Every structure is written in structure tokens, then in C-alpha cells.
Amino acid sequence: MFNQGGIGNFGAATTPSTANPMKDFEVTSPPDDSISALAFSPATIPQNFLIAGSWDNNVRCWEVEQSGKTVPKSMQTCGGPVLDVCWSDDGTKVYMAGCDKQAKAWDLASNQVVQVAAHDAPIKTCHWIKAPNYSCLMTGSWDKTLKFWDTRSSTPMLSITLPERCYCADVDFPMAVVGTAGRQILVYQLEGKPQEYKRLESPLKYQHRCVSIFRDKKKAPTGYALGSVEGRVAIQYVNPTNPKDNFTFKCHRSNGTPNGYQDIYAVNDIAFHPVHGTLATVGSDGSFSFWDKDARTKLKPSELMEQPITRCAFNHNGQIFAYSVSYDWSKGHEFYNPMKKNYIFLRSCYDELKPRSSS
Image (cartoon, rainbow, N blue to C red; front, side, top):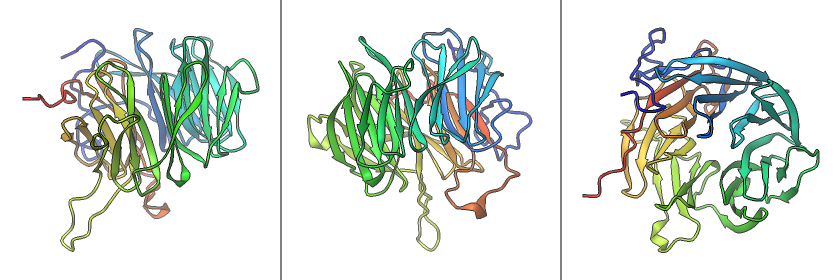
């Protein structure tokens, strides 16, 4: 049961069962406002640490123990709501970006924070790039630029003008993907130095919300999954061998009501399992689902939470699935209930994400 780096099957005693319908393990001392970013520590450090950024301007760090218990370790405050977080490849630093138009590096050992990036508008995404010949932080902003910072200089190594505001991005060396307003997709190759590789219009008709790179059987990044606000995910290969390899599927929709109308919700986040290559989606409907894109099947749906699921993440060896439950304002201020707390849940997920056997 307690696989390496996994967690046991624990329910949460203090939480009403309606808030935790999957009986998953609850992270202690969650953020005080909506959760905007989740990231597990890399494989380079032996423990599992979880970082969460939120609209209360804070970034929190917990250690996740073998038993499934979470121990709050530290917290840093930014100058505005946090929109994204990421780890350095060696696990010594956490990068935090958000509405104060800055990205900061948090050195976990010394607990010191320094500014490493600046934009003219809020920074929506931050990703650490570790290349053989350079390391840098990539930041995507609503100022319509993508910047690359070596973190020791106050000027970027490179600044790329985007067609529109950056809404979502992912990096898996040597590939980066950025989704912007106006349904534009930009694919970059990062070898040598970052360069635009392809520019595409989205296969989805509605605004992008999230993008996640996937790998082929040889563990090379080969494509990406794109989620939209209209309950749909596109699986796109960068260089498809067959145009039929690219497809879209519907998700995060209600089963229809007696009057025949269906509620359609945003896909808020997508994460690929680091071992199996299967994926998880989370949505404003308050559910997560596990999928096998190659067999084109759903592996597991979840029960509905009391609030939307905003973000999700797998730990480095794919034993733990984390997901955050908090209001995403998708139904406006009328549906904001300050009495409803924010949660982060952890699920032992390795077996549930095994691909369908190709029998």
C-alpha cells in the first residue's frame, strides 16, 4: 500500500463528507483564498514537498510524509495574488509569479526571497527550463510577452512578443507550448536557445484555460493537451504521423437535465501521469477524471466536490495526485460563499492511472 513516495488510504476526519466525497487525504492549513497553482518537488530531492499559490497573495510549502500526513513547512507572501509557481530542477528554489507583475525566487534553505523577473502586467505562467547549455525561468504575461531570465540579471536573456496575452503554458525540455488570448497556440523549441517552432490556431472554438505537454513511448515530448472553457480537451501532436492522431473529447459537462439542456464547465487543469502517460483533467463542475488518450477512454470519474477544482498535479513518481478545491468565480460573485473553505486533497493514484490493457 505504501509504495515508495506514495500515501496510504486515509479519509479526513474533520471535513464534512460532502466536501471530500472521494475520502482523500486533506492537506492541513490550506490557503485562505482560491488556489491558483500547485507543484510537487522534483525527483532530485528524496522527500515530497507540495507548493501551492493562491489569491491570498501567499505561497505555502508542505512536506508530504509516507503516511499521507502533511506538515506545513513555510510560507512566503507576494505583492498580489499568485498566479503560478514552479520548482528549480535541483529542488532548492521555488519561483512565484502573479498579479504584482513580478516573479520571485524563494530559496527554501535560507528562506530568502529575491525578485528575478518583471513584466508590465500580471505574470500568468512561470516555468523553469534546464537545458544542457543554459538554465532560465520562462515567464508568460498579460503584457503579451514571453521572457526568459537567467535569474542573476534584471534584464531578460530573451523577450518574445506574443500575438496576444499569455493564458497558459507548459515546458518539457526541449519543448514549450504557450496558449494565448485569441485562441493562438505557439510551440517553441528550446535547444541552443528558445525559438518559435510552430504557430497554430486552436482546434478548440473557445478560450484556452490550460495546456500540458505529453511524451511518446520513448519519453520524448511529442504533443500537448489543451483544455478550453467549453468542457473540451484537444489532444494535439506537434508533428502527427497521421492527421487522425489529433482529436478532441468532451468532459466536465452535466449529464443533461429533464429540459434537455446540458451544463458545460471549464477544464481548469490537465496533468499527465509521469510513469503511465495517462492524464487527469479537473473542472469547474467540481470533478476530476482520469483518461487514457491512446485507448481514448475514461479510466475513472470522481464524485462532485462542493466547489470547482482549480488545479491538479502528480508527484514526481506518480504515486500521489493532488487537487485543489476552491471557487474559481466561474458563476460570478453571486455564487461566492465565504463560509466554504478551500481544500487541497491528496489521492493515492498509481493503479487508477494504469492504461487500459491493450488486449
